[in-house]
Length: 150
Image 1 (cartoon, rainbow, N blue to C red):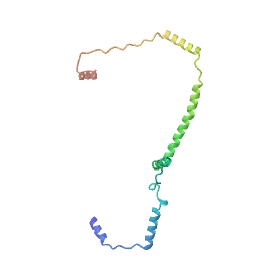
Image 2: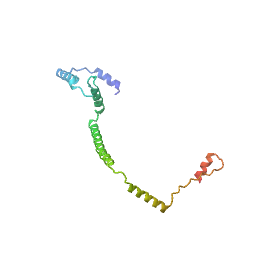
Image 3: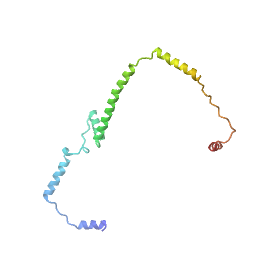
């Protein structure tokens, strides 16, 4: 059966009237659904107000609405990280502030050790880099082949 045949057959059917109580029931349900008290949160928004706080609240609620529990969990993790960071930073700076300076005796002992080590090993010699040997002027492609083969 083609769609055109179906439509022709449907047009030949006589229309039946709905029972009166069904009509009233359907209309009352539609009125309740369209009332401002039963409007969904997504489709119904408060009119814009001049307050900056309400604008921020509206934007955040629109952004966070799909998964509020996930966003709340992420915020809790960040708060925990921030708290741990603040508590550990105070302890480390206090330890660094109370560190005593190196005494002159310790400094002299390190110098003596370095002198003895130099006597045992000899002075440090830094190797001088050799200059690359200049070859005859050739095209660069030949140099690449030579390097790949060598």
